[in-house]
Every structure is written in C-alpha cells, then in structure tokens.
Amino acid sequence: MTDAPPPFRVVFVCTGNICRSPMAAAVFRWFAESVGLGDRVVSTSAGTGDWHVGERADRRTLEALERHGFDATMHRSRQFGYHDFDENDLVVALDTGHERVLHEWARGEDDEAKIALLLSFDPSSNGARDVPDPYYAEPAMFDEVLGMIQSACRALFRQLEPAIRAV
Image (cartoon, rainbow, N blue to C red; front, side, top):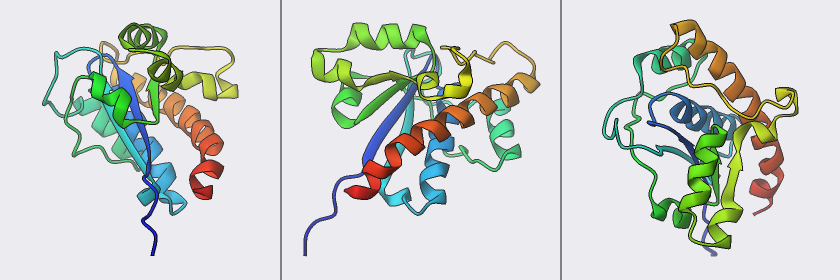
C-alpha cells in the first residue's frame, strides 16, 4: 500500500488576518470539500502584520461568512513567516500591497514562484487587482468583499482542481 500524496497547501495573506484572508481560506476550503477533495487541500491564512495575532476573525467577517454558508469560527489570526513559503504550495495575496511585501520577504526564486494575487485568477474581476479592505467600512462591505473572494476562489479552485485530482 502506498502512502497518500501530501495535500495541496495554500495560504491566503492580507494585512491583519482578521477580514479578507480568513474569508478566502474558508471559501477555498468549502470549494474543496464540496467536491470531495477536502482531504486533498489545506487552506489557511495569515497576515503581513502582527496586530491581531491570536484573535478571532472580525465579527463582521464571521457574520458575512455565516450568512453565505461558510464557517471560520475556529480561525485565530497569525502572522506570515518564512516557514509559510516552505509549508505551502501557493501563497495568495489579497491585494498588491500584500503581494509586494511577500516578494520582499521571498528568499529566492522558489519562494517568488509561489506568490500570486487572488484577483488575477478571476476573469470577471475586470482588471481589478485588489480585494478592498472592509475593516473601516460598514458591515455591507464585508458581503461585497466576500462576493469578490468567492468569485476569485472559484476561479482559482477550478484551475487547480484537475491537478489536485490527478495526484
């Protein structure tokens, strides 16, 4: 009997790891689970800053996710570290500022090659590059941001699914 292949690992990165990246991790995990690939994918998140380390996702994030059938109640914020490059197959930035920081932190070509911008996977984003930060906005903005993340995560998962299934 052969050992099962390791799961595909993706980490989503935003600023404080309490709004956008926990949304993306929960949504991407849902896509994997919805097609029976939950055991083949590990979806996590992290922040570029350490302001919220150890905290739950923002209440408005959790409420928006719950309204749309997703769950991130177990989420605890953490800061991205060099080990995340080693432990993940894909490092997904939620905006160009995060992407720039990740490229600055990359230790070489292998790390650089893992970095991608979430909206770059979504043809319906009409050239938008950044998922806006809803932290200082009204709760309705969290639903709007979640919609953008759902669309981009769907596109990303559709692109990765054949390779994940083939392993």
